[in-house]
Amino acid sequence: MTIKLFKERIFAVLFLFFIASFVTVQANSPKREFRGAWIQCVNGQFQGMSTKTMQANLTHQLDELEKDGVNAIIFQVRAECDALYPSKIEPWSRFLTGVQGQAPSPYWDPLQWMIDQCHRRGMELHAWINPYRAKTKSTHQLSNSHIAVTDPTSVFEYDGQYIMNPGLPRNREYIYKVVEDIVSRYDIDGFHIDDYFYPYPAAGVKIPDEKEFRAYSNGIKDVNDWRRYNVNVFIKELGEHIHSLKPWVKFGVSPFGIYRNKRNDPNGSETFGLQNYDELYADVLLWVNNGWVDYCVPQLYWEIGNKAADYLTLIKWWNKYCSNRPLYIGESVDRTVKFADPQNPNTNQMGRKFMLHNQLSNIQGTVLWYSKAVVDDMGNYGTMLRNHYWKKPALQPLMPFIDNTTPKQPKKLKPVWTSDGLILFWEKPKGTGWKNEATKYVVYRFAKGERIDLNNSNAIEAITSSPMYKLPYVKGQDKYTYVVTALNRMANESKGTKKKIKL
Image 1 (tube, one colour):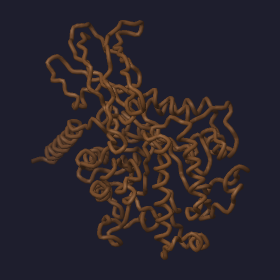
Image 2 (cartoon, helix red, strand yellow):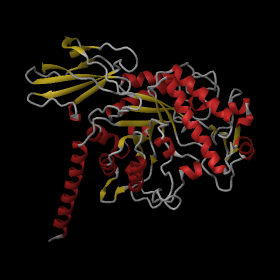
Image 3 (cartoon, one colour):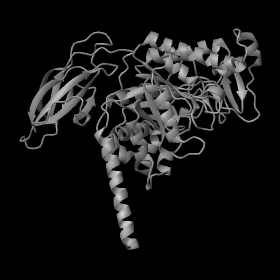
Image 4 (tube, helix red, strand yellow):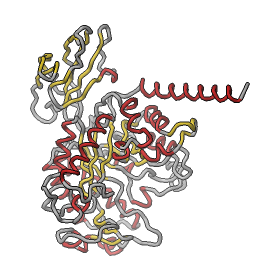
């Protein structure tokens, strides 16, 4: 066999393997899947932008993410005890205007604007805050209304940052007040916190909380157990505060990707990195197993084959141990496209990771770090989403522990010619209360002779908040059956209403 022929056969085998992998992912594309993207402010991507420029930037991101199949945006609105929304409690963020405490001009409310834009596109909006961080290293001037200025004893300095001391009970109450303000005033779908609890450890720097440990130990003798206790109380009570105001608002957390290493815990992962439990004092499995959070998004930002924190090891670990609440995986777009698939060096790791998501039974979604990397189509990531992996829309995962009530089905489906083409209209079903009211609709399409199966995700044409859908009319010769169902706030689905239409 010649070298040229050998290479051609190897290439053919690799190509067929890729196609088989792709077909497997496509054939098993789930009907329900959380497809999120983080939009952060703390990296300064909006700092100094005019209102018009920032709105144009966000509009572009949302338009592209919608095409890519994203159905939820996690939007950072509080990076350092500040606000990307009008607040009577905390100052405007410098990550918005460049100066902490300075309102945007022309004036606008970024959080409300994002809610409107996301809902218009059928996306959920989850408001994301950093609960304890009060000042980042790069912030040098605080507003007179900032908590570190009005109550300096509420924070401690750590490695150039200010941290709201988790050992002070009054700090929990302060954060609850901020959260209640957001939840009560805004029609958000979820409330999200990330991995910043106690600060990430800096070499040789101690956490200065000896005084608080002596005053508030509650009989706990070990300072590490006491720190975990403080965070546990906060997580439990925060979820209770959110649900007491609006039961349908989903409370989610995105912890660091390693819970514990096996050398510290027999049930830990075969990894060698920083640990949630030991260094950040975040007992994530306790929160999940007790139902204190509604979803969990571990940040698995490593690549398959990483020596200290192998992605394959970690995704299997979280799938095994974190199944009591919906589990979504935090993905780094950058590292996914940067590294080659160990089993197919001619491709990056995107396909392999999507196969793992599909194969592991407890994984119900993905959150992408970060939105702009997807929008910029880094390594063709966005192109692959919109053309293959997330080509068809997906409903949100069910959360029966919050609600399992189904709304009534839509009524009176009717195609009507308008100046904008042939539009399928329907009537919103009657329903009172958040459990019974229809908030979105799913539009399915089936060809003539095709079995009507609402579990067939490939039949989904759209998920929309409007009681109408523009039909792809061609010549009026092909017959299709359209089925429309209603969803309530928790994505519980009604029965379908059918209409045969020639297109």
